[in-house]
Length: 339
Image 1: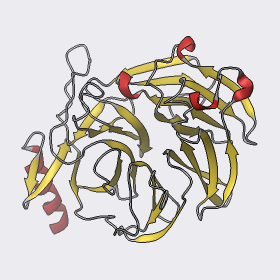
Image 2: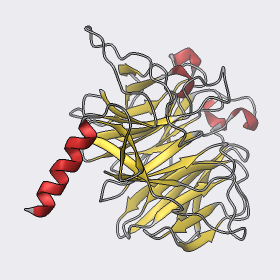
Image 3: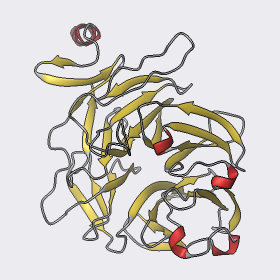
């Protein structure tokens, strides 16, 4: 009973303060039921394990946090739950960008995209390369390799996957479970705006068949496509710059790079929590979400000085969020603990 009363009083105190509260001297970020506080020093390592841009972050079955950085001293850094170094590997991806974790029977695989070597590679968790996919020359959509700059992979339950060419020509390439080419769609001629398809997820719960939910970065919206490229829906996120989407217990979590990017590259970002209908519930280190009478989301903005440029995130079983950042002073991930 004492614990329940303490929890009740804590929530009541926080609910009385809009935007940001302070509990026992600790800054509380976000709004409503989705409020967080930073865990100081989590994941900070020494000069023997440097990071540059921390682009991708995932969590394996053991609860380890796996980070992708484009520092070629160690592209992959694996942490335990306490933020201590477990292992590290990888020196060949100067443009390391997208990181996906995929279950394959009794093991898990990592898929890495590289902007500078123009390829996608799959690995075991301990760093053994299993396969690689270079630029899809056979499609006729590309005249040369350096037009292809894959940003992320999205994975079907059957093992097939899609590659987003978010920094190249904006096509989406589909491969089957054996890694064989199936089709290519999108691109600007196919209605995909440039500087759009950056990250995303294969959403298997929204409809009777899986769909692609894509973070359209500079376009400030989410785009939902069928697995053959037909447009299903669009969700505007004004003031955001969605770089990646993760789903946890029925909620969607989005890393926004900045609130005025690319016009102001000194502008800073925040993290959004959305419900099952893609309505924003909370902006962590951002302004509170406001919808008008027609249900239109009003412009969001960075608020608290917590993040610089959030790029990806992952959520653990306790609801804590780990945020990886781009172009943010070589910073390690930030852990946010649910209040």
